Image (cartoon, rainbow, N blue to C red):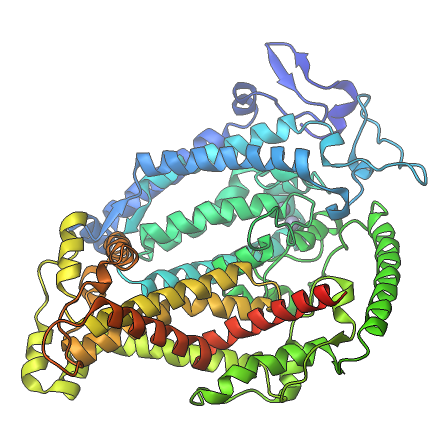
Length: 636
Ligand SMILES: [Zn+2]
Ligand SMILES: [Zn+2]
């Protein structure tokens, strides 16, 4: 099988014995494929036999399997993943056939595409339209190999994973650890496979058959390569005690991501009406790429084209460290579209400049400042009356890192009311230090809950707070849990704090999804503020007023009980039950606090969050930037 067969093999040809092959000699049905590639049957069988033997021979593994700390992934979950993975490859291929714009294309496909006679097609004539993703010959053989590779996922059913994680810290730690190890493992193996000719031939040559890969190129591999770079990593992680939910998350996300990385297109800015770009979404789902550098489709595409750069799987830091990093082609350049785009952009820009100049003439009467400082300055205005929260960043940082508005006219001088100058919340330290502080408060509260109650209210209160409540224990059925949840919130004012904080948390998430004037880092930080706001205000009520530890500490021990508990709290707040009159510790007269007073307390707390806290400053920044754009549009 290989390129040399192509000359004798027209598209979809039938050779004797009912065997079908595509134009480059790849079998186009699974039966023929397995006949020519028995390693896809015997390979996983050997891996399965090894896995079962190891589970019996290793005393510690056998003990873990015996007492339920570990269990095989199982057939049902394996089937779910396998179906998902195969459907994902076909769905992604379909998406690129229908939607991929040539402005996003990295390579000219003609270079590697052969006609029915097996000969390379000529390069397009100057000015002629280049081939796009959908014009290429249907990847029939590649799709069969990709499907066969993903069908070997059945071995995962036997992999002995540990029980699901019981805290978010554990889940995040394992997910990050696996991502970093897998990337390192892949980098080393991949680099050796390219530098040693025998290794290259045995493991990796086939994957490089397509120098301009498509989605099915992701799993266009030999079985030995699939085992060496994927199944072996996961087997090792399983032996090391990786929880099964970490495996599930990594595989579903990773399989999708590798399809995109082999698509030959830059989709990082694709939004399609969604509230954020693909790149922002992936950064939120893989936050460690902020530190280690997130790999892009352009980099892996360059690897397929040039063979010697960009060996890593997920991150860029290793290639940068070993000097093998290349940022790859600019999207659209190879097909001559990015230059056309640039020319169009220049024309648009000139037009916009003219419009802005006309607008400025019309509004000479009002004092003029630059838009970027104006965003920065108006943000601070409402904060001047509020108590000083974290130290503001220096003005220079502020003006430099404010994300410029998307369209050209907005970057021009703009008329806006002059307000006292002050820094915007944009410096990395001023964004991250308060966030780190908030998360350490969360950890402190979770680990030292009863002690905090003790410090505030004495030993008797601490002893009472140490007793785990039974009605909100893990495993309580949903409706019972919700009843227990409501019973554990008996202080009216504490309940108002719940409503204010949870709402503020949702606003932060909404801002992360929908901000148009914040940088990616600011949006990521806004998303991260969700959790501290959702909980910390409420916990003032628990520790300070109810003298108990928050219910989430007891029900939130597994992802499933955590989600159930959060469902109860969300229903409780947003159906209004949170404002039912109940007594409160901090209320001047005896008796129940009226609902109206509780609503007012919630609104006042929310206003405090909006005006005086770091996430509130991000909301303000976005709000004022939008207001400035709207005012500008109105003025013109
Ligand atoms: Zn590849
Ligand atoms: Zn390679």
